[in-house]
Image 1 (spheres, one colour):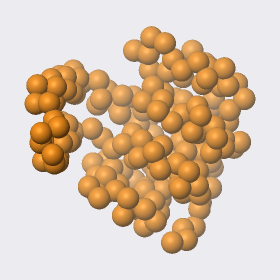
Image 2 (cartoon, rainbow, N blue to C red):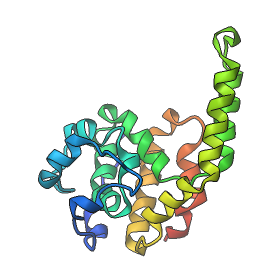
Image 3 (tube, rainbow, N blue to C red):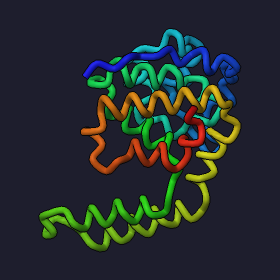
Length: 194
């Protein structure tokens, strides 16, 4: 399916590049050294698929709000343009754009419990992971990160995110069988629809 790729950068022109000291969330003790080393050379207008896969993929969770929003227009554009090379990162991005819910944690473990073969699962380990994930969620950290990233989103930025989610859903919803894209929209971004 061919999807028109908008230029998201104009919606985010008020976002300047944060200092390296403000790139990571405060709880990051040791940030990714590759991102630290390459940070000065990276910008939304020049970000490549290789930059995303080698620097940001797997590290998206560690970006503080200003850095996340600074790079977001490039992340959205690249996920639409080069999705086959960025499927893992695209899933991370959709997750980052979704307001967290305690029910998500429970549902993930319910799904795990339902997968065969049960003989390969370790109930003790699964229960320990479930407990830790729920404890982490109950600490408020996931919601605090979401709020820190998106609480000051401007209307034009929110509208650009809506356009991304709608176009991404049209092109790739089959790869998100649990309606993850719709969850992102209905939990938060719907308010930015025109």
